[in-house]
Image (cartoon, rainbow, N blue to C red; front, side, top):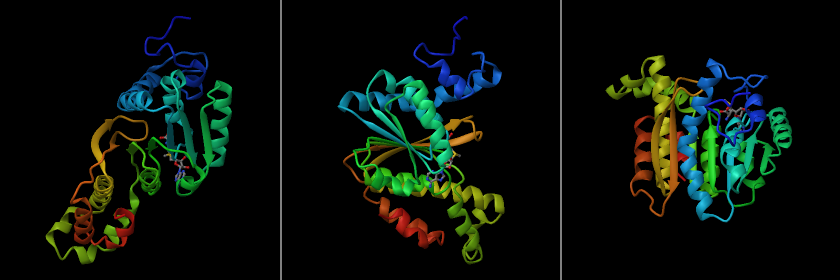
Length: 269
Ligand SMILES: C[S@@+](CC[C@H](N)C(=O)[O-])C[C@H]1O[C@@H](n2cnc3c(N)ncnc32)[C@H](O)[C@@H]1O
């Protein structure tokens, strides 16, 4: 069979078939070509981080929260980790998905990949070793926040988040709308669709400030065309020695302005 141009020599054909990027007979179609392009697009952001960590650490651990079918973990392992050193742990609350991932890792002999059937909140006590990189790709709603707290607690060097369905702040904005509408600023989220967008935007802003308050340097980029939705925010945080001086104060002000004080314990640590 002719080699497929888009597939890198080190990639496992078996894995690409299991992820339905290649058809059962090893062919690539229009749809999978698009999927592969998305995978490489995300990988181009993560690869430099893996390279840096691989160079400076004796060994390293990446924990992927809300792993689902561990799509991200398998791709990172296949493209990078299997050729170097390092381990990946996928944390996923759905035990059936974890079992499937375990079987696939065994079949592919990806021996430095492990999976935990647990929720993100409990992962911190289950993973005792040093954690270098934390990823959470579309980890539902508050699982992203739990992943963020996990990473901060573990003092991870890098945190890579692609949040999704940030419903908690939006529902609080909705609940307190009548009170908020005393100020003209609340026009920004008066209509239902704007409440959802504002809730999602505010959540990510607060997450970035939380990271900055804990000494992370944050980059926010747009990731276009990823599987689940057309547009995504990619938040990459790198641990530095400097905590942003006014970040905690800003969190407090924002929570007060938007009637979200009940979230203090979540964003102010
Ligand atoms: C939308 S899927 C994303 C899966 C994968 N990261 C991806 O992008 O293909 C979200 C996954 O997070 C898992 N999940 C949601 N809340 C969780 C929690 N608190 N702890 C662990 N897993 C969680 C769900 O079971 C689901 O498999």
